[in-house]
Every structure is written in C-alpha cells, then in structure tokens.
Length: 90
Image 1 (spheres, rainbow, N blue to C red):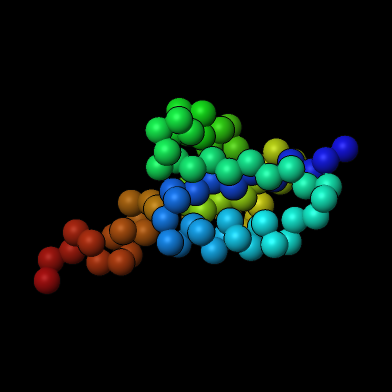
Image 2: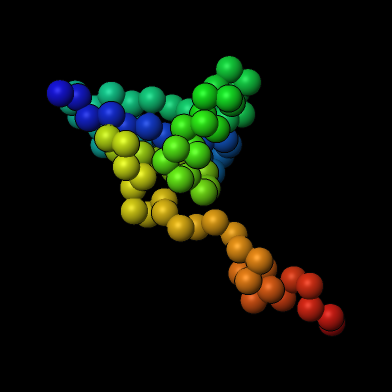
C-alpha cells in the first residue's frame, strides 16, 4: 500500500523548498499530491481538504491523513497579535 503524502502550498517561494524537500525524501512507496491553493482548479478542493485536516498555515504536509506535527497549532490568535504589540498605543 502506498503512503499518501499531501502538500498544501500557495505556489510561492516560501512553499517551493518544502515541495522540493518532500519530493527529494519520497520513495517509490509514496504517492504525492500537491494542493496549490493559488491555482483556481485546486482552490475549492484544497480548501475543503485543509479544513478536514486542520491545516492552519502554508506550506503544510499531511501523511496518510495526519497533519505532520511541525504543521500543527500555528494559527494566529488575537492574543498573539496583542503580545506582538498590535493594538497597543505608542
């Protein structure tokens, strides 16, 4: 059975090295699917898949239906913005 690897990307210079790294590391037993959210064809399907997997940022990688640990819990929160000084008076 092939390992299913899905990469969520915006097709940008920040995402491309991750795509290249996954391709380099992948073996013959890996089936890679790239969801380029910048491409209109992929946009609807990719966004639905992102929601299913809980993807919060790009690029992100999912292996056999599980979001890779390094890609979890990175959503920006209101508290993060406040802690960074946004909204505070100078």
